[in-house]
Length: 111
Image 1: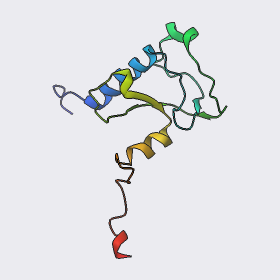
Image 2: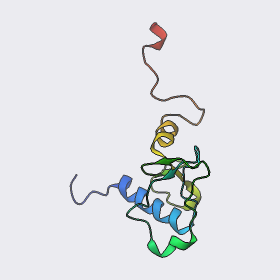
Image 3: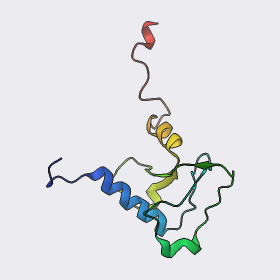
Image 4: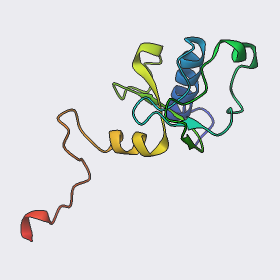
């Protein structure tokens, strides 16, 4: 990617993560309630005393990802974000607003 082009994906993810940290959103998946095994490198250490880390389910995942609820990577308001484990994030990203999978088998009608 040329240096003059803006990579909205990584910038959007970083900004949303920062907004979720600043809002002190509980740090576990908002769908399956799994928490991370360890704190991420970008976690603001000044907030460590104000955070809830223990997952209600006492289950862990390798990491948590910031999900843009409206899928607009430039809308980095904390109200538009949520923490998700990679599995839940992939499931949510593969469904549309109506709940239909977007990666359905194109040959399904022929079977």
